[in-house]
Length: 203
Length: 223
Image (cartoon, rainbow over all chains, first blue to last red; front, side, top):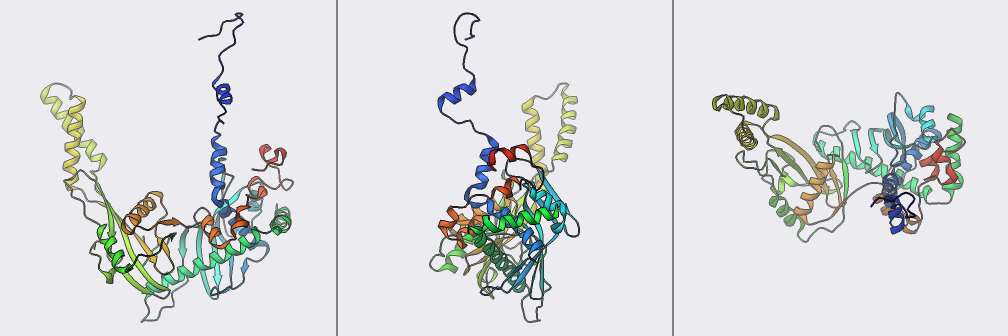
């Protein structure tokens, strides 16, 4: 029913006004996607990988032995993929000899991009593992295991799976170390400022 | 994609429920109930999925010796998920339908109706399907029965959805994909985790280090 000019009748409410009057909140897709992503602690995946860049470059990337897991160090390989917060489509991939140490990477992190996938190098005893780790499910991709040391009577399949399990155990230890920092007040008081200083020095 | 050899791209799962009583017997029964069955080219169905031996992707005969393995860390159940898709090649169907339609129209002196074209297409597709070879995909899965962890050698959504569905149907056990949330719950103290919020700087940027988008600098609400 069209409003009539000069008739004194009010115009029809817009859809936006009707939604507001009904008490329903209009859904902002970007916000909703962001909220879903932050649910259930999934944001920790990208925070872990982003912290790992700092830890590898500024602190040497070392992790002390714990239980059955021997000490190891993590470094960054040839490729790092970063993304902005959910709902904002900006993705950056940095490649090269050592993108983990590059000013471009620090610049991206300083701007709010976090690491969603990275090529990593894990060295433990005399073994070297190369792989890509994705933040969402901690999927392992393009894994190159250390050369097998199988004796003739050993099963190479068993050794292959054992090495994979060892890699998994080391990554869980690295994540546990990150989580121990992340859940303490020291994260905000000490670690984040240290990351800021590291970014400042390199950008 | 290969647990035993070849490239490695894996997704890990945690098995949430305990193993059933008489686990070897029950698990084997579940595998056999959902073993792979080859497609019948004459049937309407164009896709088949099921379990096959990890030692031979053409072998759906799942005996204990082909499924249970004693590994250094404990016992494994190792198996492969095979999916066959049998469809007539689209381009060839289109080509033959066009050729036959033209011949029929020339003979009858009129254009084929929509339903006649549809029937023709179905007939051509059915004939070509009898001569086609299925596309075969085999993906390995290794279940560490003692560690309650599963490794699946694919990261695509479709393959993982299929795997989860078949696993639950076969064994009646729940599984959950690994990842930062799951690992955190396994490692971290619940109260400390409950208080966690995303670190504002890591998601919106470090103000003062470099220029940030306007939205990220608004009133300190970083996220």
